[in-house]
Length: 263
Image 1 (cartoon, rainbow, N blue to C red):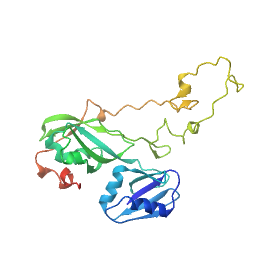
Image 2: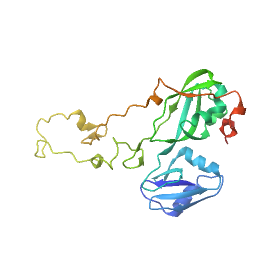
Image 3: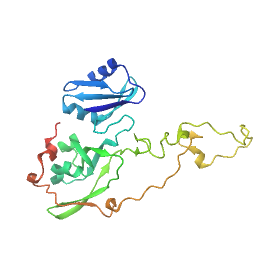
């Protein structure tokens, strides 16, 4: 089952049904209206759920629609902090390709291997899609060893990791962009100059904190120092994985083998 959220309004059911029919799904689908912005969607073929999650966002009559996998505890006012994100493993040795899902499970629940990774058309990079918790912090490298020896440090890139703000429970918000916590971020009016509402003949140039990339008079959220990373996730302290036998498939569950994924 999946959850769909319309950012602006929920279109008529006929338009929603027309949209899903246009996707040419492999199986059947059904949906129910949850509230004014949310729908619950059921796909008879699990591959269709994976397919729509690969893209994540759509438009129905110019109305943004985001689709994600339903999970226990879903509430309309609290968006899930789980997001489908690509992990990239640059220059991952060939012998570890079969263990890619096992390696990615450190970051979240892996569910789709990149096609170029499956057919080895891009040996310089291995990619896999995972359900990652946007509230957590993750390492940028891990330590891999074979039978407890001959280990090395593997770089890992999280592509376009979204933010999540606990104040508004919104995916994509942060303390610097949340207009629920800071209503003045919603395009506030320009304050009058000289206290009279008139522009002086020789106005004083605005300071850097008065102008943002969106133009003058754009309010700024307070600057909050970022919390230090845990020593566990320090670049100098990669996470050890002992052992991972990339050469022996007998030690890897069948569900962790990249070649078992559907194309």
